[in-house]
Length: 223
Image (cartoon, rainbow, N blue to C red; front, side, top):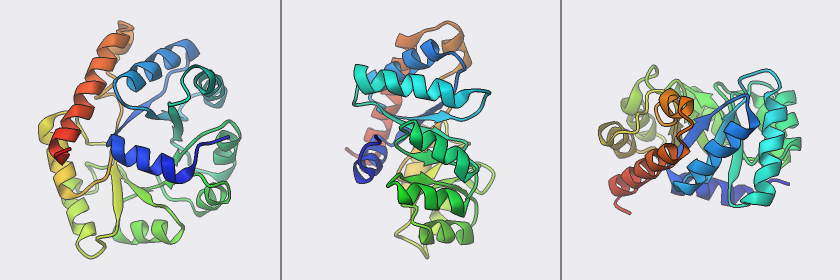
């Protein structure tokens, strides 16, 4: 069973950086996710990107329920309600999508699962909030206006909690721009868990990179 919705949302915001990751090999996923958790990123977005991805997710989630229950597995790239339901049945703690789908919101709300849909306009963000989405994803972050988009949304809608993915780099310059604009968290994929680190199976390197990025966010926030 998934963790409490409010606890998951609080953990996502406290963490600040959500690693976004997919790999078809269960063992690689377990090692990468454990490295992220060891580096301070307990919330991980596993993207629904390949054939049998839900089977990989199930095996990985089962592993962490026993091996390290502090890990909060979520799923990304969800575009329809049946797929959301499949991952909810497999124990996902949060659902993220590249776009807004009202049916996904209903399925998630019914089961107390946080849903962060990808939005790129004030109207979409507002509709997501109407559907009960607490943290709204900005996607693709760099294409819809970057940090300026966040500032412009939060002007008339200051209650809005935004989480960009796409266009966020694990550098002080990039993270400072986004967090100073008012985001509550961000998703970072291949810029954080790089192809080179993956190819080398350098899990200690991934842990170090994640830890440095989490520390950067804490510094920017003044924590």
